[in-house]
Image 1 (cartoon, helix red, strand yellow):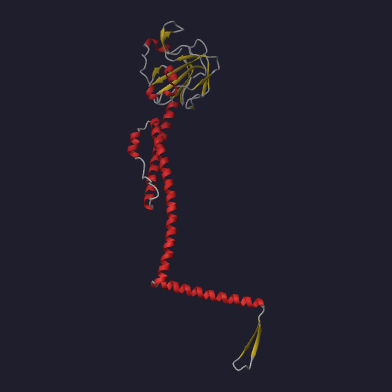
Image 2 (cartoon, rainbow, N blue to C red):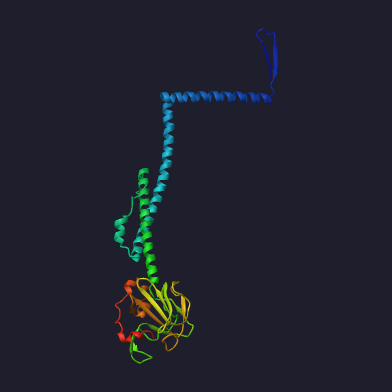
Amino acid sequence: MHLIITDAWLAKSRAIYLSGTKLVLAGFVAALALMLVAAGLYHWVFLKGAREGWPVIGALVKLVVKDEFDQRDRFLRENLDMMARRVGEMQAKMMQLEALGERVSGLAGVNPNDIKATAGRGGALVAGPSLTMEELQATLADLDKLTDQRVDLMTVMESRLFDQKIRKMMVPTQEPVAGGNLGSPFGWRIDPMNGRSALHTGLDFPSEPGTGILAAAGGVVVTQEYHPAYGNMVEVDHGNELITRYAHASRVLVKKGDLVKRGQKIAEVGTTGRSTGPHLHFEVLVQGVFQDPQKFLTAGQKLPKPSLVAAAPPPRPAPALQQVRAN
C-alpha cells in the first residue's frame, strides 16, 4: 500500500509505503488502543453509575452482587453441611466413648453415677442442614469441653487400674517353687524332730537341692540372714504390713534392700537350719501374724488388694511351742 501525504498547497508531498506485515501491525495497534480507551471509559461510566445509582447500571450491579452472594452462600452452606455431618460423627463416637468409660469405670472401682454427675452427658445435637455457623461453633465448644472431661476421667481410671494392678502384683499368689509338690500344710501337727504337737506356720515344698525359689510377689528384701531354725532365710516386704518368708535355702541370690519382681528367682532349695531334708519352708505374715499361705496361692488374681485377703489370724502358738515354728 502506498500513501502520499501533501500539504495544503500541494507544494510538498511525501510517499509512505506499507507492506502487508506493517499494515497488519498498524491495525493491531489501533485496535488495541481503541480497546483500552473503551475499557477505561466503561470502567469510569460503570463506577460513576454504581456510585450515583443510575437506573440501568444500579440494577446491573445489584444483579452481579446478588449472583456473587448466592455463589458464596452456596459454597458456605455446602461446607457447613459437611462440617455438620463430621460433628455428628464425632458426637456418635463420643457417646460410644462414654459408654466404654462407664464399663471401664466399674473395673476401676469408680461409680458411674459419679461420672455422670461430675462430667455431664452428651452435647448439642446437630439436627441437619439448617445448622448455622453460631450453632456449629457452640456444638464444637461443647464437644471440646466434653473431650477434656473424658480425658480427665480416663486418666483417673487409668491411675485406678494401674494401682489395682500393682496391688495384685504385691499379693503373694505366685507359687514359690515351680511345679513343687506340697508337703506339710499350715496348721497344728506332730513335730518331726521331737514328736510333740506344734504349729506349722507355713507350707513345705519338698524339692531337689538347687531348685529355684521364686518370689511369690513383688517387693523389697528386708531380711537376708542365717537363722538357727530357718537356716538361710529371706524375707520380702510387699507393703501393707504383708511379708513372705523363704527358709532352709542352700544359696541366696538377693540381699537386704534389693527390689524383687514377682516370679524372680531369689534363692535355691536346701536343707539348712532346723530341717529333716531338702525343701522350701514358705510363710506369709500379715501385721506380724502368721497366715495360711495356701489361701493366697489358691486365690490367684481374684484378690483385689492385700487388705481384703488378710483373713482372721489363726490361733497364736502356745509360748512353749514358739521355738518350733520352722520345720
